[in-house]
Image 1 (cartoon, chains in turn purple, yellow):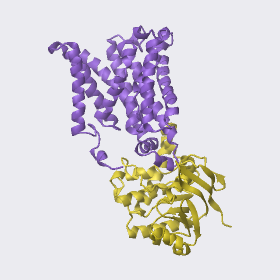
Image 2 (image 1 turned 135 degrees about the vertical axis):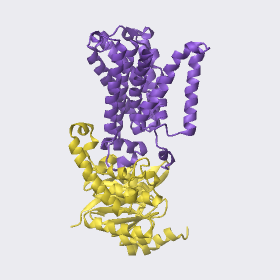
Image 3 (image 1 turned 90 degrees about the vertical axis):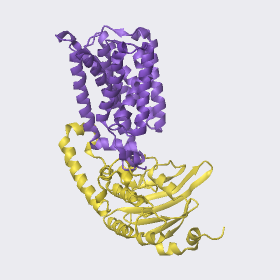
Image 4 (image 1 turned 180 degrees about the vertical axis):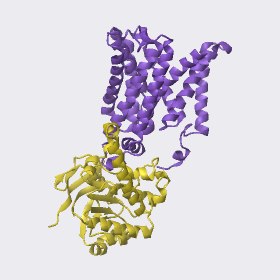
Length: 297
Length: 255
């Protein structure tokens, strides 16, 4: 039972990190990133490929994070000067390009076969169940990411991000280089997704392009919206609810007289229903502020 | 010797086939208050957008303190001291009134990520100074009691005040106000006129679009009248106000 809880918690933690990255982009800056999973994939594959070619795991992880952030820069440069909806279009395309690249460039990624047999941090040194260590690692990282992002969004820098979200003409009129701030937010959010990607690989011990379908992006969106956008605590709460429900119900399989594919469909239906109810009764999200919704522009 | 702070030369802007600004030229001297009047659709706000860089000019030149600025992005113009407010107010709704003001000051150390982590004391110190200044300005604009409310909850007139208060936080050399008095109660509008004159005495220059003729006459040193995308008349407010072309534009008249 404890093992199950730890296993579920690790997934919750990974998705909380992943979604906090999105919250920085969407909740605080108003950037519509529909390709967040692309950066998760870059983080995961970079970490694994670097390690498989002999780099130490910490270096591999760092490279994954940095490269994901760097791709945030690459995607941002041509799109963040445009109207916000273009970012949505470009990012969803970008994440599919990443996935299809991973699927087809078999010389590098072994394509649909996926990758395995890579190291995990301190794996050889942990005398007890590695999952317990991973749990600590993931939640330690989540705590650090949470504190860093909170520090950032409550600083004058974060104030500029929020003003961009509200109306970017205003910060521009006040002398803020809006483009630079958007790039920074996208890079940091992407780097955070990259870190989540590395943890995802450690948790599964196997990665394949199937793990990085666009649906993963929308789980992050569900988490952010459910918790209340621009509320990092809400994002963590959202991750707990969505992932513990999604993962936890898998273990209920034995007790429910449904075939596994029916069960999978039912789970998604329930998540959908949850969202509909949320939008009806608490549209600001669980920890969001109701007043914000009633404000005119 | 009077220095020109802003010089606009033969600026044109077309939207599709419609000319919005058709060769407007004028200059504003440093430390003066210039009123800009004209009927709706005369091109006043478009001219503002051109001067502040929200639109690109089709032709013409704009100089600010003898530097050519028509190619500069908006934020760079703000950094060299040219700041505007908006006709359709742009309150940052989901930020508090105080936060709106705190956004104003230029080049804050805490707007750089590395300073937040490496120089937290400097950032906090700077922030304290900014807050103090913001409270002072809020007090003047009668917004103190609203400081912790969301800006989106302000009334139309209050949002207009917030715009001006926020712009003042940047310590601009020149402030371009787009209908600053619309929706503001008469008592406060009078007070604003006084404040604007006081700021001019301290060295600030103003360019103000306004439809309230008595107020703009009172506040301006010089009045420019815009019609069909051009500045066609300029002079002391009393003279301009009584010019038949101005009366015509404002009171209607023949075709």
